[in-house]
Image (cartoon, rainbow over all chains, first blue to last red):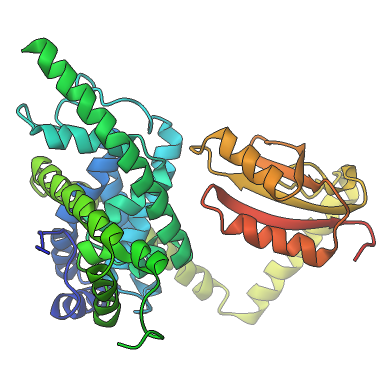
Length: 197
Length: 218
């Protein structure tokens, strides 16, 4: 079984280094904060950009999340990994934004959000986005945190503040839905390509 | 590996996504792999999940990350630090001013007099009743109830099925905050009600479940 690159920092030296950075941020070290921001910006941006309606909201929330990290660094006691803590903040802010926007089930609209996908996106990219957009917000979050961000189910339970079994159940429903949707979406894509060809 | 340590099919299937993303603990990983070697269903699921993983890997690379720009966050932090500094300066100034005991006594006396004066000369303001998210409990008849918030993204048919399967009926809701008040189709004890609340809380379409009892019942 091959591995693939994830956004998640590996457990070990990175995790210890990040805990030291948070410690420094607690002491109001701006340089440490800038380093922590640099480490988490691409991960948070990638995660939020995929689940939120547009770039502007995603970037605002990245800033909101890191502002909370600055303000509440004293509340982090090492009871979880730094990544789980930070992504937990991002998860809750994203869910609030999703509920507020109520556009979660909107079909992919390239005219509204043209920079979400490159001009010549592989068919699989389009397919997986369409499939993921059909999932409920809770189910999609578990898929995103697992496959895009590489978190374990225990870490996702910490992030989402729910029991481990709830994480597994949500993933079960998400997989079942994707298993149902992807062949249908694939067929629809082939029909469209056939008509255009 | 003994049969006592062997993982059940159900447990293995649940953990497959985290086997694929390489985040299982070593012992869990070993047990899932052990099971998958002898289970055709799990091997098929693994192939499907590897396909999804690969599609997601391509999708991840397709989303460009803009260049890092910390001006906005730095401005927010600067504003926060300024506000906190000002608050500390005000607190220090107050502490300095009230350093003398007679000044503190004078201030306390003034506050007490103002409070008493307000109570005597201003009309009585009726205290606001305690607001809950939904139907006042006083409006419910005696019995056991459950307050539930369902996932708004879930289909209504799932909600209906779940409510019926647990012997519940909708008494009220959804409120403006999405809260349902559910009653029991048949008389239940507090223990039965708590069991139902646990089952609700374990369902993925339920965001919140809370027991409510009205009247002197057990």
